[in-house]
Image (cartoon, rainbow, N blue to C red; front, side):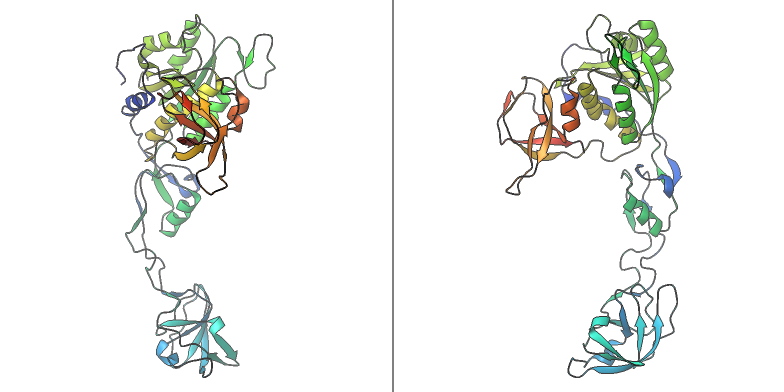
Length: 410
């Protein structure tokens, strides 16, 4: 439970994140088939149930021989060996006989008794025999059993988000099901008398609710299961009904109504129904952010401006969703970039500037330039942005050429 008293003092982004994430638990995991595992967070190690490869096999198309039989072969004095059979994928070959060669394909089992593969390029066929032109060393082009993985080796670790490659590896290790973190149920609601659903032509003084589709997609992208509860009107009664309906979820995310306007009721109603620990964070965009609880659910109230809503979701809601699944990395990996122009910001606020990335001609760090107007309602710069530049709170002017952290968005 979040129980700190509400203060009107600004809290740093790092402090607000710690206070939130320290209280977020991991949900009970579940078992899913590999066909449903893509993007899920692994909850237990995946270890091999077999050796890989499971048998000695050839790394080349060529001829399986004994190295001792061709020890003196050369281009000028090739060794002639009779070809007595073939080893191909999916079939067990006959045993190898000293003084002979066996045709072999890449990945096919090594015949018992053979210890070397002569590349096809180093041999020439002569009817029922083969001429070996190179004294190929012992064990050349042979992949021994277990050379890649031994039974019991762990290759994929808990907290890792499973990729298509991971799923293929899990299958190769002998698994058809994996234990993964449960997807948290995330209730979403918007607030505002002026809002109409996406697809509805807005009337005078009305706005399309773009935050809800954006946040629904962001929840899915983070691994959560979103449920949109609708648009609450600017009244305590409407908001209370929506928040009460949401409190059985793992996480509740609202947008708008968290500032100090005469019709901003989210803070008051949420405090009546649960707890509020954080209200204002020293950041731009998104200074008014509510963090607290509703019943057993974590509650995060985001600002209403689309850019502020997007940025604060990235910094607060996304890591909560990932922690609930047991993810090892809660935040996106940041990168270093060099500013391509001078930028300014308000003192005292950690600022997240929308920027586009450009390859440096000298091969150094990427250059970042403003994606456009940084106003919190400006969508054109948000959709153009490749990243968010992270400017420290104390700075007011960031000179061109300054190395800063960036949060990739694509």
